[in-house]
Image (tube, rainbow, N blue to C red):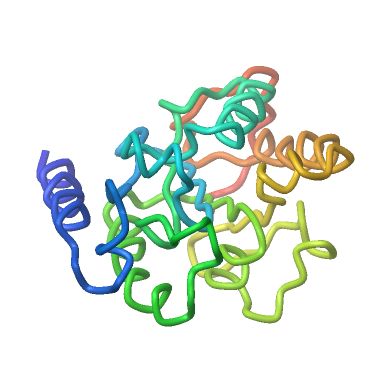
Length: 201
């Protein structure tokens, strides 16, 4: 209960945050959504127009594709936690600046420390460069696991990229199947799931 209370308190801080200029143009900040006990966190770049309107992550067309991706491995949005590097929509859906990322990143760090996932999927170039390696090439490293401390990272193309380039859809569906091979002490049951017989990731 203490963790849930802390996460709800953090969400309220995000909703009221005025630490950068994005607070001046947003309709709603978007803390995140999903299970507060998730073993998997999916992290995108920033909210888009639909997310800004509804205050929820990945609810536009890219969100529909993300839901399909999860469904393809037997997961729903309520099984995972979904959020972004930056919690407010940049005007005209531009990329967040380095300053905006730096200002906002502590919220994601706090969410991660409270939820304690074993797997973080980074969706797209900016999320992957921010959380894994600033020199990471998403076109070369997508679908390849990266172990960092107690967390395993899985960089994936952003679902929005697959909407612009339909050829990437097959790649996304193939890459996300990697999640079927990962689990932390059986907290999540996946359809056709093969657990690694290892200690905690």
